[in-house]
Image (tube, rainbow, N blue to C red; front, side, top):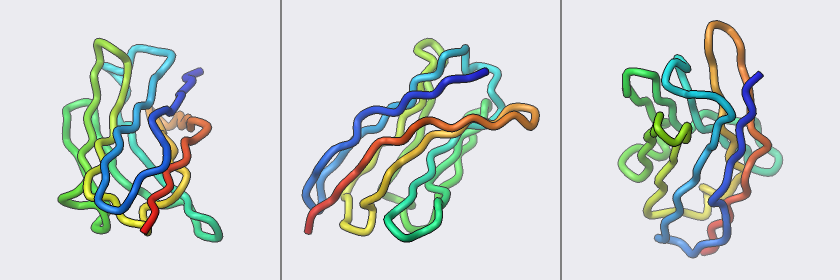
Length: 115
């Protein structure tokens, strides 16, 4: 069982920055893939970014060049640095871990970007 706890969400103006954290209850060194997803009101949950245990990252087109993802195995934490935020980034952000078919989700953290 892996517990994931997100933090760092909040309210920010257009063009601002936030850093989200996802703290895991286990050593993340061997977790094959971790990722960030988001869900806006009335929309389906969508991929934001992923990072595997080799450090390879992927990003949704909507956030490329603005968001970066990283993981710190010493702290068992994954981060999402979000810069130049836009109102369309407003959503609940969730972290996810995937390891040999086992998938775990956090409870989410709200990000609101005002125009």
